[in-house]
Image 1 (cartoon, rainbow, N blue to C red):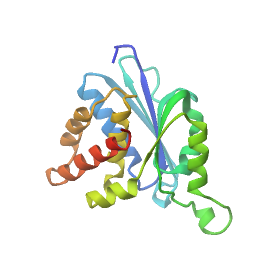
Image 2 (tube, helix red, strand yellow):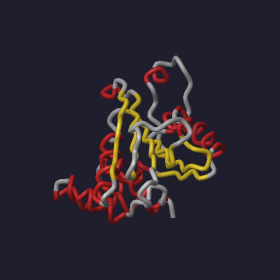
Image 3 (cartoon, helix red, strand yellow):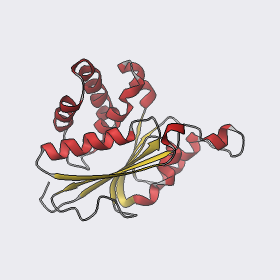
Image 4 (spheres, rainbow, N blue to C red):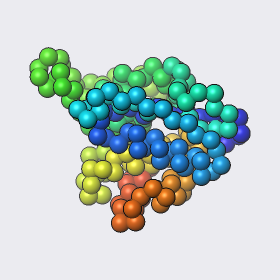
Length: 198
């Protein structure tokens, strides 16, 4: 990555999916390469399944931690509806990494509004040329924990090449942040996420 080249990634999901932790892992990997990283979060009723948005910007000269509309190199959608709601951040030739599983909002569960994750996915695939689907449910099942979803999407991010961070960079960041007994499971999730892009 060139010294002045700022890269921007917006992560969006709902409370409990690990969106904020994923943003911190990305920032840690960038800093381990000698880059600067700035993050910012917007958390709305996260404990109740509210929207969570995390901004991550890496490079050497970062003016602001928040990403302007239309300037994100990558949009990571932990949930299809949240990805659709935040699509305005993605630049025209940007990359979308999207988890397949929907998390129904409270209003839809109460019958106050219709919501279909499949419809959102179809819309996003038509709207974005570079759209990659991650089967988070399958990866979590294979790895034996629902808590590896955030690491899986970080693996997909590495494989996309958009943030110029390698799987090795991420593995090093995980080693610094994870308990040793959780490391093997998370490295497996990282690789499986990357395999979704290939």
